[in-house]
Image 1 (tube, rainbow, N blue to C red):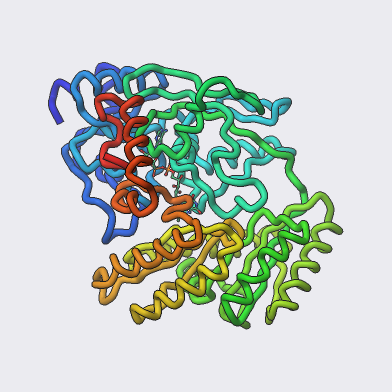
Image 2 (cartoon, protein in one colour):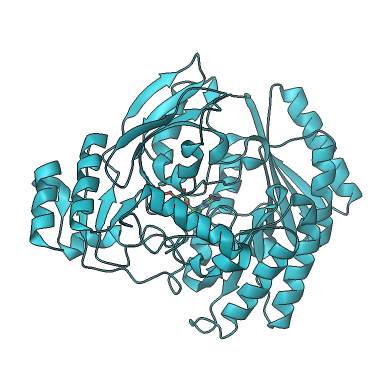
Amino acid sequence: MKKEIVSELVGIVGEDWVVTDLSQMQSYLYDETELKIRPRACEDCVVVKPATAEEVSSIAKTANRHLVPIVPRGGGTGLCGAAIPTVPSIVLSLERLNRIVEFDSKNLMITVEAGVTLEGLLEEMKKHDKLFFPVHPGDEGAQIGGMVAENAGGVRAVKHGIMRNHVRGLKVVFPTGELVNLGGKMIKNNMGYDLLHMMIGSEGTLGIITEVTLKLYAKNPYVGTLLVCFDTTQEAADVVAEILQAGITPLAIEYMDREMALVSAEHMGLTYPATQGSVDLMFILDEASLDDLYAKCERIVEMCEANGAVDSLIAETTQDQRTLLEIRSNVYTAYKENLADSLDIAVPPASVPALLNDLKAIAKKYNTTAPAIGHIADGNMHNYIMLENGKLPDYLDDIRNDMYMAALKYGGTITAEHGTGKTRKKHMDQQFTDREIEIMRGIKKAFDPNHILNPGTIID
Ligand SMILES: Cc1cc2nc3c(=O)[nH]c(=O)nc-3n(C[C@H](O)[C@H](O)[C@H](O)COP(=O)(O)OP(=O)(O)OC[C@H]3O[C@@H](n4cnc5c(N)ncnc54)[C@H](O)[C@@H]3O)c2cc1C
């Protein structure tokens, strides 16, 4: 990185917050994308750690003057290579923007700086025990800014939805350096085009988020986790719509091929409680009374048994619930070393049973299994394609394309929550028309005329 750029950055944030030494920079160059398919990071970078939105703005102006790219960096937990700098870049870490700005109980909202981690937000919420924030991607090291930039989903979207449903206001530095406030503490706002929602899911390509206002929800005091075991994928998949139609809306309905739960439990040194069956549905329910909680669990079990369930277990203690969630959340980490790719496709929820059937047939065609885990009530499945003898299998591109085409056939998407980033960018034309991509390029140019913000991500 050019000396004059480094010295301008030092002038903005101070010497202590500019990293040029490669060994200290390493942990800022990669994210959690599967090792064999993640893009190679460019090492000609500088890491800068501003403490205020004004410093972020000055850095953007410097980058524009020198036409050097900026890659915003949150917690580095992303799964699509979006935070990996692939050309000489300023890696702008938001970690020092980590203050809770305001807890506003009357509006049921909280405002935090973008570098507050999910763990930090959850700690803060413990102080306000009547309200909670629902979105929970598996890794609590994710930052709130990163969760907005990736429009994160996670296990609890069934009842409350994804990040987009909860973001009310953003403070953003545009790539050209202007600091703006988008949205606010409003429930309704129809003035002009909605730039706030353009930022959500833009993966650090349209603006640098420095502050986020989130909607909070009244907390139901009684939480239970129910595990229901089936012999076949189809039996498990078929019952989900029936449960939702019955007016039962759990926080989460997760699908797991048993082998994945067992691998994760072993990796975590935990015991998986289920032994019968080969696939599981995990339900997390939050209810206003213990009676409601038990009644809904019983109703779910009845419907599952009528659909062939072979066993069911309820985790009532906080510890048992945490154990199950930990096993679920760590499946990716447990498999990561042996993974070629983990897919993130989604279809309309009613099409999941048919999709799962198709995915099994596709895996069989390539003589493999591609085990599945997923947020089944959201229609979002993660199929794992494994390495073979430590190498990417020859059929990786073909099986992935077949699975993507299966999702698109049902009106689905190639990525539901993990993002396009740098790894899925090459598949944009499978999902979008030329005209749609051209309009996206126009949007990018309008926000970022010098193309300095996270180049190589989503579109060129
Ligand atoms: C074990 C595991 C489980 C996961 N489970 C889920 C899951 O269930 N659901 C889900 O949705 N995701 C999941 N993820 C993915 C990941 O946690 C989310 O994508 C998360 O939102 C990324 O946040 P981050 O702060 O780590 O962002 P990073 O990885 O640092 O960055 C991601 C992108 O956001 C941009 N960015 C970061 N901060 C900002 C900012 N302040 N302003 C502008 N752009 C910014 C970066 O440039 C990059 O393009 C999981 C990841 C792991 C490792």
